[in-house]
Structure formats: structure tokens, C-alpha cells
Length: 92
Image: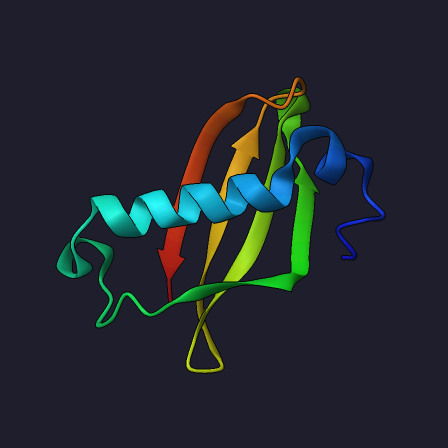
């Protein structure tokens, strides 16, 4: 999804919040705890998925890339007001 086309991206600063949350997970957890072999990972901002959840929640997902390969995803769950509700760091 083009981040400029979805109104929640600008309104809630989604791209920066994904970047900040992802960095915090990497900084605050060991590679063993995250089940990864390197912290040289990045988010793929060219494909961001927005999923409307029950109770007005929105999940925003971006693939995690390692050396050009998708190895998982990072997702933020936001309330209808754009407040943080949860996040997920998933490695396949």
C-alpha cells in the first residue's frame, strides 16, 4: 500500500511509529529472545498492510527483511484514536 494514500498514515505517523517500535524491539531484546541470528534487519515500507480489527482496532503490518528475504513481520495494533494497543514481532 502506498503510505501516502491511506489517511491514517499521515494522521498517526504510521511509518515513523513502525520504525520506532521495530527499533525498540531490536534494542531491548536479545537475538536469542527474538529467535534471530542477526540484528541486521529492516522493515519493508513499500508494502504496508492495514487490517481493520474488531472493536475499532487497526493493525498495521510491515515485512521484516534480512539480506533481501522476508523473514517475518512487525505489526502495530492501534486503537480507533491512534493510540498504541499492542505490537508483534514475528519471525517465520
